[in-house]
Length: 165
Ligand code: CA2
Image (cartoon, helix red, strand yellow):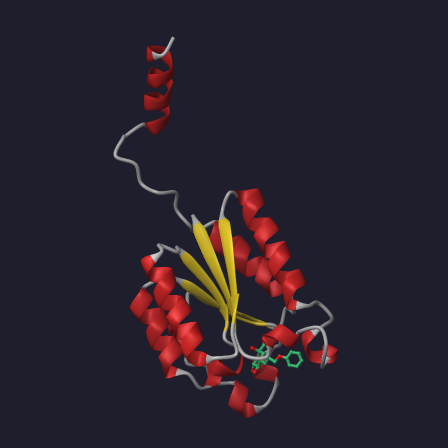
């Protein structure tokens, strides 16, 4: 079971500038705590950051072929501009949560529109770096273990053990 966390342009500089808006936590700190959160729940968390729109589109397409089950995405400024990222997310059919560290609706008008919100499962904005933890918590509780052909896999496991006795 895997969840992909994508961060868009400039988010690699988190924690170094504008702490009043984006806080002091760095992206590597956020990513490593998400990986740990996933590990504790038995879910693989993959992380990806890029300043390039096409690279984000490529990563979403790759995620679909690799069977990623949920995406958490902070597309940064591409949120407000990118039909390409929207199309990639819709095309992948992977459910996703749109995330923003700041409350975009309390900021400049141009940040109020998102190309992602109406196709997202949910939008989290304004909770700072904690938003990632909440988004991942939700994603983890909505990823499904792979289906098995066996109707009662645990029983089959027990029987196999007995055969080996
Ligand atoms: O609040 C968010 O998470 C945003 O997605 C962040 C984007 C912004 O364009 C969106 O409107 C809202 C910008 C990320 C810029 O990252 C910085 C990190 C450190 C210092 C300055 C900018």
